Image 1: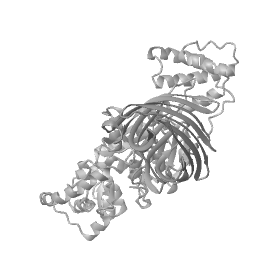
Image 2: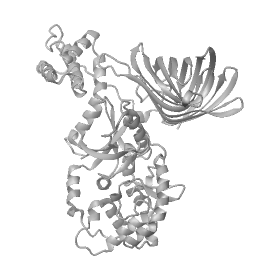
Image 3: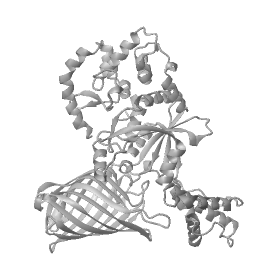
Image 4: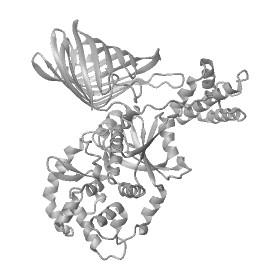
Length: 619
């Protein structure tokens, strides 16, 4: 999305520099057949070319000049293919460097021009070493659930896994991951800005599966769902050859569109170009939506769940009594010895030690326990479990509620209501992803992530922009006996605010931080923070607000409701002390949502009361 603005400038640059470039570069014959083949989906997919609707031309999403063999290759797929035609017609006895750098393109061009490949890829030493590092004739894409503590993983993450059908060493299988290189991330604002506007390069890496699972499942507590792709052996090999081509190449990374899942989907499209896998993704590409696209095109043959270590711990702990749970926690922290269970039955002891071992392992993985004492604690737990059988009647965690089976990411809403004595009608469009009022199935409780949410309001015969949310993130994970994660809100939006007794449009950036607890199935939260607002109504066009929030949230698969209170005071820009009380209730249907809300705001002794009834449709 954001990359397109930069691309337009490059189009004009190409026009003015093409003449000088052509004179310095070898001439390639671009005949009618080459022109036709260069615009085929197979060739465009290999070069990561996308068409520009304004100029009706092509441009590659690859940003490395060495990804192309001609100086104009990034914007001229015909010239790139003509290079291969000339190469295939040459009489070189020695294998050309281009063949070993781009083996997938080489084989595609040979097949397209109906010639026997003149050089064997076995002569490409670097390629053969890499292929030996990625063995297997089967590939799956693994989706890691959303992780709000990392902006680049707020919508989830995905990576590839290669394995053999008869493999007995699954944890050592090779995985290939594409992510942003955030080594020089800077502060939070700089990190978010660079992530949204392509300021980070995208890099790929290879790790064995057990290391990937340790990071996502143990360190971050993320569920993994594995989607096996029904690609045959030849297609898997073709995918590997293309992944070799893009390794080490620069693709600017955008959190919203050209991200991990988009790049993997683009690579898979080189194997099945006729499926047009990328056509549904323009301004944004949410990881779970790319998974749904693979399912829709019947590319998924099997799904396997991998519950996180945190989820397994919580489930096993739920089978213990409160006293047994406290004993397991204290043993895991080293506060009581693992042998201090003499009055317990052998099966109860086994269960307590099992939970203690799980919790201790997570404390070590997440660096939440002293390293010097952790080894002794782990050793003592292991020693106590040696002569005890595994717990009997110990069920497995229930089946995961997969995000791919949850509601679609996009949503549009039509609503009506009243604001004081004036009636209004709202029309809004949300690009992605999930709010507290949406159906909970497949999503994490207490988590809200919204991007590109537009809202229009017709009131007093005037149509106005009600809000434009660039991003809104709320994390209300409640603390428990094991962990105490912080709760926080972050948002950037151009929206209407009730200030000094009037409605004003402001560009607002807000951040709040606090804690949440779970009481009788309700998430109770308290947060403190504020906002920096930009508008003409403020002195020097800027207002600084300090505020606090209290809320009670109930979420289920069948309904949700929330009661919240907000109190704020501007310390700069305007004199305004504001309070608001709101309540909302939503009822998810199959692919629809009904919602009702009420708000009461107070500013400078002036009240504003609003009632709203809405209908939403997912897409």
